Image (cartoon, rainbow, N blue to C red; front, side, top):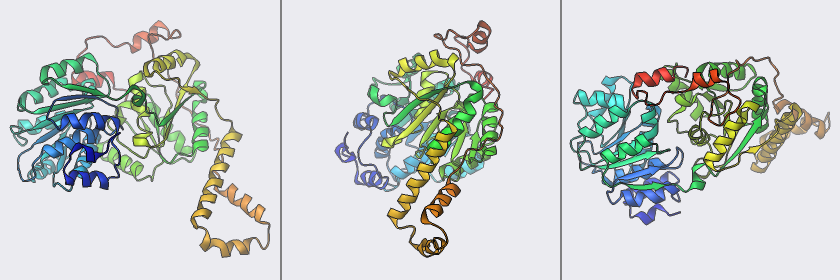
Length: 475
């Protein structure tokens, strides 16, 4: 890996990367930044959590001029959450160069956005629909745009934004620099690149980086009706600081949320039925770690960029390998270790093998822990925390009280009582999670024709937003 000093960046940007704790570049930054700095168009293949925002954000900031009042950079994202997160990182990277980014997205008061636009930000980070709304009102003018970025382009096309994106790219100056970043490169992405990019250079992460090398990946084979108890045992065993539990449908998410709260876990949930205010509240609690567990559907979690996630639990196996990589990419971020767990029924083993072939990695099978193993795991975690407190000197103010307590009982008994008090013992409150049929796959031999027919999507279906909503209404 390189360092940011090797790219010939301005002192202001170098200072910003240092303040953010960036030391070495990630793979995608190492590949993309030198090319982008020359003004060439780029197609970058990279997952969420690989540092791609800085990969396109740093060159964009370097191109922008501080004292110009027109919009110089545009970043288009699939979701409002990603728009906000990208804008935050751009603002941090551009803080010492006085380059400002403004997120523009649906669900926010448009008058508030109009007021913010009057402050003349150099960079706009927007979702396609709200961006086009501002363009129609002539509140956002892009005639002097220097660079445009399509972030998570495959997700935008999956969500039915192709026509919007083509309209936007048609209306911006043809001489601009274009950068496209996508986790996958399906044919529609390639068609978009051919139509709107000029001799783009293709950069992609090495194969070993695509499946998150810092994340330990396991699967547990269990019956559908036993999955929830297995999840609870693993939560007790792992005691995650911040975990995301992925479920297939919004009904499933609601049931998991209710069940986890019944058993005493600190959990919140996001899915398509929540208002934006509620989503913001849930994400705020999760990011500041007042909530330990976030339960989410794939669609609701698109664009979430949360660097502190330690564990990902696939309560339902992902629909396809791309979804699997997206999910586990929420942990093991930027060099930090992470754990990704997938629950698999006997009928889903072929589906798991399909994912393994696609990611070129064998996922390790582990036995579901017993209740006693979960309790022992909790005890070990508490013991480790007690030792850490002693090593850090955090116990000193309690020594006098401790001395008084052990006058009437042995130190061993007192410590055992403390361990019992601090250990979260398994809660066996009954919880009902509705059963669901496994995802169909071409390689699955256990799926009946009716199930296969009900899940099959017709080729060549409309890419419009209404089509997307119909296909994903259960999210």
